[in-house]
Amino acid sequence: MRCALSIAGSDSIGGAGIQADVKAMAAVGVHAHTVITAITAQNTCAVREIMPVPAEMIEEQFKAIISDSEVRAVKTGMLYSEEIAGTVADLLEDRSMPFVADPVLIAGVGGALSDDGLVRALKRKIVPLCDILTPNRHEAEVLSGIRINNEDDARTACELLGKEGTMIYLKGGHIDSKNVVDTLYNGAEFKRFEYPRLERAGHGGGCILSAYITAHLAKGYDVVNAILNSREMIQESIATMYAVGKGNKIVNPMVTAQQDGTRAILTSLDKAADKLVKMLPVEWVPNPAAEFGYAAESPKGPEEVAAIQGGISASNGIMKKNGNAKFGASPHTAKMIIASMGQDQQQRSAIGLAFTSDMVSTMEEVGLAGIAAEGKGDAFATISKAMKKNGSVPDAVFYSKGKGKGVFLLGTDPDDIIRKISLIL
Image (cartoon, rainbow, N blue to C red; front, side, top):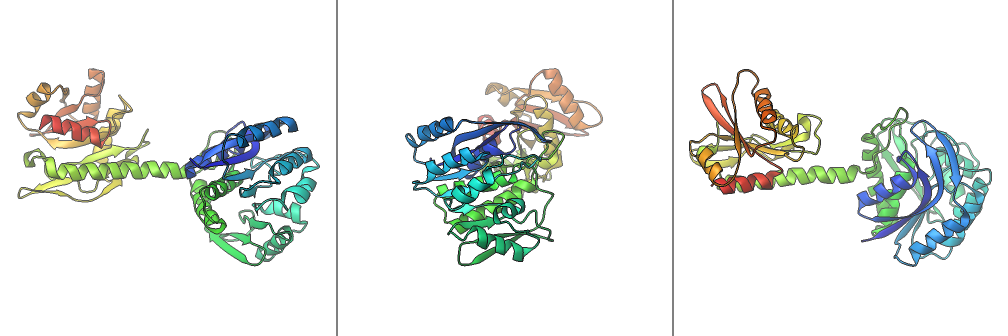
């Protein structure tokens, strides 16, 4: 496992600082080591208190990590004081790994995260030492000494900050423009990165972006590709911000991991459907199709339940998968899965099959439990009521609708559905 190091402050609300860095690096597939520089008492509304960690303890944290693990890249965030910045600079002076510095001065929720001497220490010790500096508009203004109102100003600030060879990645989120324009300066040329402007950036965005960049560097990416990949990720992270309190929303550092989970759901369902096409008896397929679904964990509604588009149908004895897995493709199946998850959150998959006369007895023989759901009105209310009365989610629900009969086979995931169908067959 590749490892990277974050040297930063602790955020008690968990949206920025060390807590955000650990999650962001994990989303890239990198293990995060941590050196805590300060403990903050803050929430989504304000920073209430800051307690800096003694320089001796910062040094001991660093030495404990370096003596035991190969650190592939390092980032700094909140350093708070001139003394801490000097200590960290001394520790990193002879490093062999890439060093990303996020010059944190103000919290996303408001409030200073530095004492009076930090800016001086950043200018003298951290900026010349790091490989990449990732300031926002305010930080770049403070460190360069100029006002930044447009792209030309941003480029001038980058030249001033990078005059000793440091690469500068100036984030444009706080610069007034239609789209967000970030500027990368490598000492010889500029690269311009333009992205659609989303909702106002929430708590933790700067920490998360620099952590993404550091993690990509730890995985061996070159600087430009590390930034490109990280910038795409932070765009999604901002787009999926969530609320945990009464103030600013939290930027979502785990969006890629969540997307990986989403892809896994679709892939699992597609593979299982391909198997069912080869194994389902024609008489088990209802008209017009067998609907097959798989839900995300704790789905908020049918849009978070995936299903095979068009289901699995049988025509002239030929089985066919009519489409690929897609979220929201079958509200009918989604209702069934959500009803079963109301009894047991692990029961996230279901398939609707035609009823056959020997199915009940065969299920009993192989140890699968089924219940009957009969009643008038909404079928899913009747099924949900039957499961509540049963006290648990069965393997199957047999139901009647008009003159027709059907079966919902339930399972924890698509592979569990395959297993149960194999037993019945």
